[in-house]
Length: 258
Image (cartoon, rainbow, N blue to C red; front, side):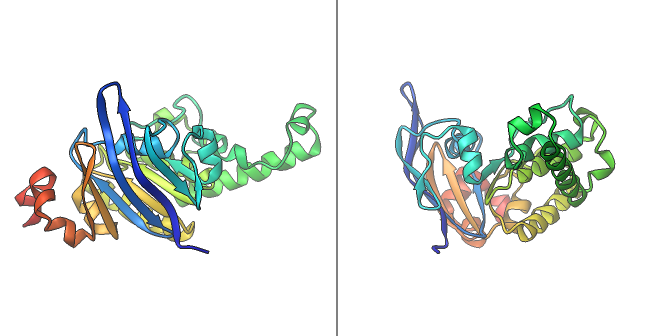
């Protein structure tokens, strides 16, 4: 089996006369933790949206496990094995913490709609299995004590954790994290770094993350891609990116390098 999991081949997207992203080539091997950084408006989240079927690239192709996923709907991309979180938290806020995870876990259920409609034994067995698995996810994230709380009542950092737990409950091979540390204080960010390392190892995940916190990016990523004005300007190890003149000029600034 090839180590190559995801490949972006010269992808781009145009909105009217605006080329938001163009000529982007990227790859992720199985098990890698890769960062995608750049200034606001550089095209990072747009790239995530193309990866997850929210947008369809107007140029190039995206392959996952050797098959093109270009043009698939978001739910089809999820079924292929790609899950994501969002820059702005998108939980079901008026639903319990447990039910948020169960909803994500539901497409993996092996009992039929018919068994649910007629409340057959298979339905109750399947629901019990799904609830146990969902609680197990919450335990990993330290959220099991909040399982009956409404998601909107969780502290901000816990909401971030819940969003990642929900993404993992879908059973992905590739996890896309869009600014997971946004709005967190330094201690919460450190806890998040530890959590990402834990789930990566426990679930054998490949992770691509967008993040503005350079301490987090430089601390956990093995490779980093840099976007500016919709185009890749650099790719390399954290040390190579830290010392790349184009990246320093476009994004990092001298103070980050020192």
